[in-house]
Image (cartoon, each protein chain N blue to C red):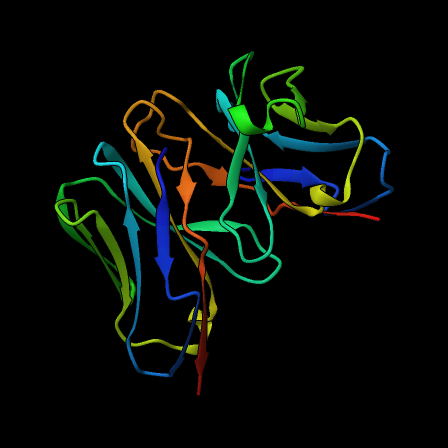
Amino acid sequence: GEQVEQRPPHLSVREGDSAVITCTYTDPNSYYFFWYKQEPGASLQLLMKVFSSTEINEGQGFTVLLNKKDKRLSLNLTAAHPGDSAAYFCAVSGTQVVGQLTFGRGTRLQVYA
Amino acid sequence: DTTVKQNPRYKLARVGKPVNLICSQTMNHDTMYWYQKKPNQAPKLLLFYYDKILNREADTFEKFQSSRPNNSFCSLYIGSAGLEYSAMYLCASRNRGENNQAPLFGEGTRLSVL
């Protein structure tokens, strides 16, 4: 079945610096890709969803890149601030099983002033 | 209310005793999921209900039961808890027909088995 590798497991950056989290997956039929953010004691909050074969999506302060050729998904926080400190999870699913997600192990991001 | 609610938030159980975790949503989502998350591991899908049809993952088939008495509620049942069941249990829901819709997660129930 699908396997998702997420790196790094821990990341510490200074406020204003960028932070990059990367996931690689194995199933070439994977179609739906998600990034979730989890703050301490809170639920997994959807950060971004990506569907196209090669796509850059931009949100508030972050960019998501999907490269289906390399089976790689990345999350780039362009100018991190302390409020970004949280755990981040990538998740992948196929077209027939959209809600059945295969997650990465997560990245714990710490942004310090 | 567009949230998924889980009860209790924390659960302490004895080895060998049953455990019942509850999840509810009022968004009329047709599909509800249960994931298990252990420290330093990825959340892992245990089972899901599409309407009244239960689908359990092959490797956890005998370890977990579930029921969905109506569209809003879904339970996760452990008949005899073992130490290995200690984990965070996450419930999620979505509508199956909306392919662009990401599962919406609850805050989770942290189960500690002693």
